[in-house]
Structures are given as structure tokens and as C-alpha cells.
Length: 418
Image (cartoon, rainbow, N blue to C red):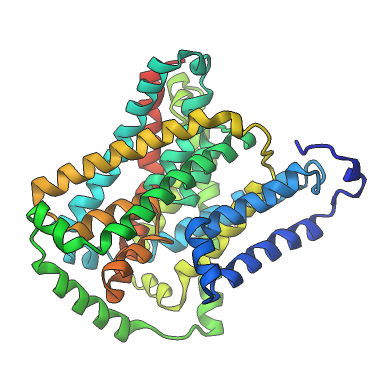
């Protein structure tokens, strides 16, 4: 609920006006993010655009700018239509053969990073329960950290899916976004610093870097052969297919959930949730399409449109967040720090064992913790032609994000109880 201030008589209760405000915020963020001035580069290096797209609406909501219920209505639309649409558009873009062509070490490091996140979450909560048992009087925390697991394995779409799946409150979800972005940002910053010294780190890892040049050549060739401008026909086919599959996923999800509803164990593990099955179905449809000619839709911007949907969803989430009390939740940030630190230690151990290049470690880790939005940035820090590698692995993270987040959350539930 929004904070009530003296000027709340002027709170916006018009859905079109409120939606216009959050879209304007997104537009301004991306416009300034694209400026080449030194100030803006430094500003967005410290404050990622995704944080602003969430926390500017959250600040406005906390000040009482949006009337009660407005944000919930806009979020309801985005979660019902735009969330599954974004999952489909991002997963259909996967080129599985090309990802496998990067070499087994690239996939191994990506999967190692995924597994590290899955198991580091439960370990972090166990340590937190040992240090501060009063934080675990109910099931609030493990449900809240499901959003972090979904984001760090997949992305914002998977994070929103975890919110709905495990019933995370809006205020707690806002805090979890802070835990997510704060810890992911310092790791991203560290990666960008260490990338300048990758040759020394590769020597320490005893890495085999022979595949990197082949990857660069293959990626450059792929980009030259497939990039083209979108036509009206392309966009209409894309939107028609996308929302037809969204409708199908909802239809099937409701019926599968109804089948499991009578079973108590199914309810406990979310098998009776229509939202759970909708997300699973839409993800499987996207992965299936990635093996067909439908994947060519990404040549005309499918994943970019999916990203647009995600940022609208993030801003809608922000409209429901009340920022009061975040300062008092420093312990949540500390739990996230421990989680991320354990993840980093684990991926370095795996990289040393399999002699993986530091590039694969960084892009594999960030494809999980940062997703398709920042993984290309990491890849570019090593070589501009490697940016699509980050996109490929980031998209693979979207495909695994929901199931990986679900597994990690169930482990957290088991280890902390309640």
C-alpha cells in the first residue's frame, strides 16, 4: 500500500495516466543510458538501468503518487500476458547447436554456475538461520529468496515467475530485487575489472584457450549472414504466434493444475498452480520452436521485443513496492552477499579443475546472475565479436531459470523448514 502524504488527494487513479508515467520512465532511462557522455557512462556503471526502471516507480508509489490498486491492475495485465510472451520470445531464440559448438567447457561452466547458484542459496539460508534464527519464524524468507534464485539462474521474467509461484509479497519482492541487483552489480563490476587481466588469470587456471578464436570467427560469420530489418509481416507473424501460444499455455496450465488440485502433495510443490504449468509450457514451447524455422524470428528482433515486455513488467512491479523499511533489512543484503560469494568460489574451483578459460567462467556466471541483458557486456569486455555468445548463454539461462529457481527454492524450504 502506498504511503499516505499530504498531497495524496492528487494521487493518480487513472490506469492510462499511470501506465504512461511508467513507460515515460523506461523511455528516459534507456535514452540517457544510450548517451555517450562520461557522466552517463559512469552513472549507469554504478546504477543499472533495470534498477531505475523498478525503483523510480517504487519511489513514486511510496510517496503516494499512484492510487491504491492502480499498480496491481497494471501488474496483473503484464504478468498474465507480457511475462509468458517474453519467456517465449527469448527461449525461441536459442541456437542449441551453436551453443554446443562453443565447446564443452563453455556449457560446463554455464551449468556449473547454475548448479552453484542452486546450492549456494540453501547454504546461505542455513548459515543465516544459525546466526539469526529469529529471522525464520515463518516461511517468508525462503519464499522471498525464490525471486533471487529465479533471477540469478534466469532473469527478470523468471524472477517474476517465482514471485507469482511462491506468493512473494510486493514489499518483500522489492527488497529481493535490491538483494538481486546489488550483489549482481558488484560481481559484474569485478568481472569487468578482471577481464583486463584475463591472460594472467588464464595462466593461473591453466586454461585451454584454443577455442576462443574459432568462436569469434563463427559468431562474426553468423551475424553477417542473418541480420536483417524487420518487416510489418515479420512483426505481425511474431505477435500472432506469440500471443496464440500464451493463450494456449494458459488454457493447458489451468487444466493440468485442476488435475493435481485434489492432491495435498501436489499443492505443496506447486503442481496445482496454473501459473506454474503456464510458465513450464510456454518455456517448453519456446525451446521447441528454437529447433525450427520459427527461431528465425530472432533475426528480426524477437528477443529484443521480449526484453521490452520484461522492462514494462519490472516497472509495473515497482508500482506496487513500498520502499519504507529497506534500510532495516540489511541482513537480507548480507545473505545475498554470502550467496553470491559462494557461487563465485564454486565456479573458480570448477574452472581450475576443467581448465576452462576465464572468458567462459565470466560469461557463464553472468549469463546466470545477469542474464541476456548484461552477459553480452561481459563478453564484449573480452572481444567485441563475442557479445552474441553472452546472448546465447543468457537466453539459455531463461530456459533454465524457472526450473532451476524452483529446485533451489524447494531446497531452501527443506533446509530451513516451516
